[in-house]
Length: 202
Image (cartoon, rainbow, N blue to C red):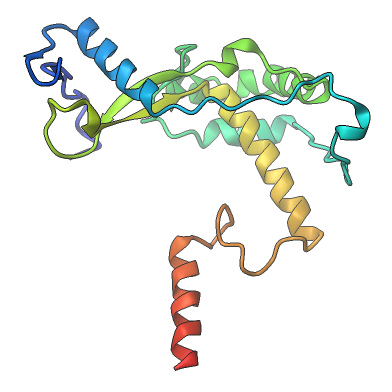
């Protein structure tokens, strides 16, 4: 049923002013959710790019990423078509249908971006979408923010991630206790191993 459902429930009637009134339009509801999400946002101090060389961390390896046409084509063909587009409005259905035509120019853009260390500004923005969790739908605290970023940027991230995981696996730099962000490992496998260790100690 979730796959067949296309209409999302509208977010209206959010409680404001300590429960004295409710929102009456989408603009008011969006502002209330924006104010609520900003309260839980933590601003991190960015490291100055012009810091002294002696303060910069030493890089022990250089990761070379090859954005081959075939790799990009595979990522485009395996896009989940039910995912929402980012701020650029490019839907995964469109990218999937035009995969053959887009793989080569995208591979050139990805390679240029990685080599220069410059990411397109459009890929740095996100559309924040409130997702209902549980409880009363009129309570802004019962919604969590989900950032919808550019799908093209996600494809580039996947290629870099695959290359990085392959590198650390070949170099055997990951400990056997690392379960997060690894294939065929998860929080469940971590809990099972922990439970097994506790059982053996009894």
